Length: 145
Image (cartoon, rainbow, N blue to C red; front, side, top):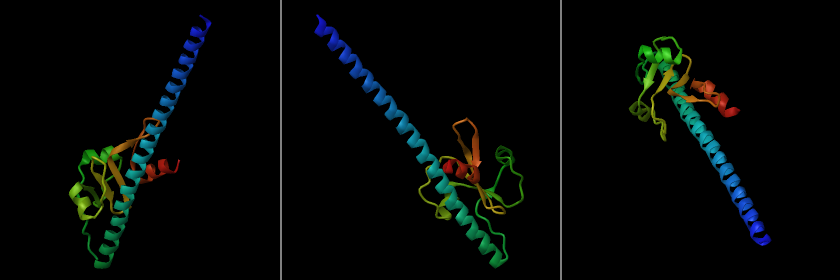
């Protein structure tokens, strides 16, 4: 009789340890996936920023103002909380291909301010404290943390 109770206790402890290990593994994997997503977004935005710098330098040398992308709608400007300076463009997948930015995993379009060379992601990235950040500067600060 005593052995049966002891076996039940051992079984309960083993199951409890397995459950704790599984929960720990799930949290670790989930956190790792969020970090990879953030790193991927930051890398894509840095590629876009580098291409924008090249375009700006070319425009200075040629004394032109040729920018890749379409004019940004007013509602997107409000969403990003930026003012139109005439040098803000929205980049579609086709524009990104023209810029030779590859490996894009994001669904929404990117926005580039050619004057400040700041890059924005229209979908934004939701932080742990439920804020949504759009700019490369803010997203890079998250990567550093």
